[in-house]
Length: 210
Length: 210
DNA sequence: TCCAAATTGGACTATTTAGTCCAGTTACTT
DNA sequence: AAGTAACTGGACTAAATAGTCCAATTTGGA
Image (cartoon, rainbow over all chains, first blue to last red):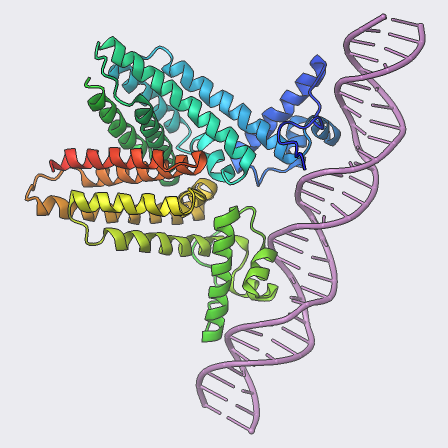
């Protein structure tokens, strides 16, 4: 009883710059491999080879593979949310939202629609495991928060105070994005992504009366 | 050269009723396991145990694990598309579309949002492998076809001949469904699914002028 | 009935895999 | 400079895994 649900003291945090660099190399390599092949198909040995670390280094910083996967989720979330926060931070108009759409489509096109959404793919694979699911849910919530904030700015700028349900709007937008990216990945075409985003943008415009 | 891209003669098709039953047992068991744990986390040994078959039986009907996974995709597609074809077949009104929405939400609620969409999850895991990707793309296309046909009936019934782009509409609807299901799975709430579907239905209503 | 083809059982092999262990090296503190 | 803690290298283990092989059994047709 008294299960330690939170971070166990088993896992060492790096205490020197060198240790931090090693840990970062491991997580970076693991993130790239998981992105390309999925978590289940990424072996510790492959991470070791790619990061030029050794087994003891991996198990010094991570209690087991699950902990490493959790770190990968956090790393990938940082990356994706960082990108989108950058794109959405100052957005305050429908035109800006459309530019964001174009940027997403462009990004997808550049990779031939391969890989889908880095977070969405992780979510599909890891949403049945409590800890990973929680981490992914939190990331999605933050992502939706960026939309919500942008919608609030759009609304404020247009001087329409009567707040539509911005949280609902942002969840619908995120769903369109995720569904659009999944279909784009499977059909190898950006079209479903474009259609889904255009629909969502129109929906936002209507609800915000813009 | 002359790579045999289509089905190789390596894999035996069952020629007796008994053989067909065995093959079906194997595919059924594999489908359930893949649904619960993903393809990469499903071992042949687990399939053998669950289906009460033996190793030689599995390898008699399937050249390797990939072939079995392909059969699982087809089986799951049959199941999901069968369900949705049943729900969408006679649909010819906005009210009918809303009933379909309620049914999907209900189904999702019944499983506590676990598992997401059986096809969507497979798509996220297997869209980077050519053969599996192709099978999944075809399934999604058929799925979209059911929507398209339903939209055509809705339009015809309302007497509005000027066809909006029904294919585009159906792709946006499918994207909303997939994204909504993925978020529902990760957030363990049907809310994003409901919001995404309501948005898509409104979009259809607008475009079809209903 | 009898035979060839279809099907089945499961032991066996090759690898791969997660995780352990400990001795050796490097870095920080005083 | 020395001592302690942090870090590193990699051999090793036990279990799991995909796939092979062949002898035994069952089936359907002549």
